[in-house]
Length: 72
Image (cartoon, rainbow, N blue to C red):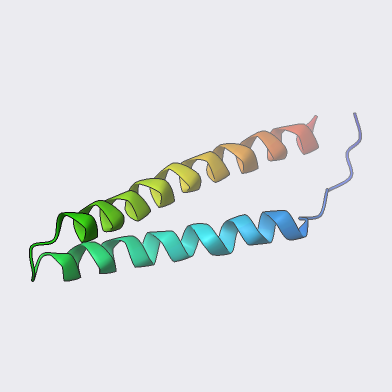
């Protein structure tokens, strides 16, 4: 149990960037799809938004667990 702070890896940064992209692109695609009825666009926008929310929650849990490990 070390008390040293672990630095983020490139994978962590990649996860952050792609999660933020999904959180911004999901609603943008979904709102644009409301102007012309296309079920595929609705599914794509909602899927990006759902994945973005899921990944952001998983990322928050990862950081909370990581902070608890550093404190111990």
